[in-house]
Image (tube, rainbow, N blue to C red; front, side):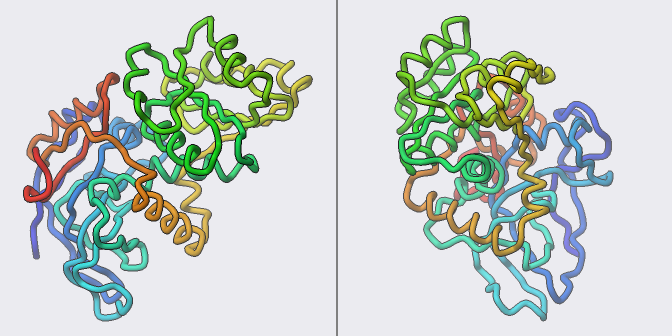
Length: 335
């Protein structure tokens, strides 16, 4: 059986300690499966949470982490007729931090030639979350305002880019003044603020009385409450992250007098519940946005699997200006 390099997780704990490079054996290809040679796979916050044992989904151990990535089809099973060898494909939910994997062919998403693979590798989590947040909860109209915290995060940037494309205006909040530089020059990021005591007045000056109907919360705690207080009557706040690791506090008045809707979103559950047609439509739109130059995620560094400890430590830092990826193709990526 073929052996490939991979990041192997044998126990939960500190990512830089418990997730280490090693070798695994690839299973034989069944009729409905495909062998994919991986090109790149990002390190997302959820991946770190999985390794720490703090995520709702816990893989069987030993296992391979990694929730998304991109690769090239090298071989297909005898029953696969709609996927050709050489096709660039998105890979997900299979432990993507490995040189190659065997997966069900129907779970792969073909990517057109010419798309930057390192960008496509990051489509399934952050941009998908952003698009769903903007589409699933409020029927936004051109010119509508959206307020979000963690605006310099992967999801936050995608929200800014997608909203700008569709004519929605964003109010973008960060927790550190230095983080404002991360958004400088981002189309659509014309209204950026540091979360402090001056925030309500600054937001009010930006919208000039226009209602804010949608708030996107990735932080929790007092930051989420600040967002809720900015919403118009009947507005919706959607929580999709908890960076501060502090619980939400919902004052009675925001429910009684403003009738706010408090919702949650987890892209993993969306994929579990969505039909294949809905998923195909989502990926088709995301790929089109990527091809049009609407979506672009900054990359700070790409590491080989052998530098797993360094890569995971880098990805865990708070003050980064781009994503950290594992790269499997030296011809495409600088390490």
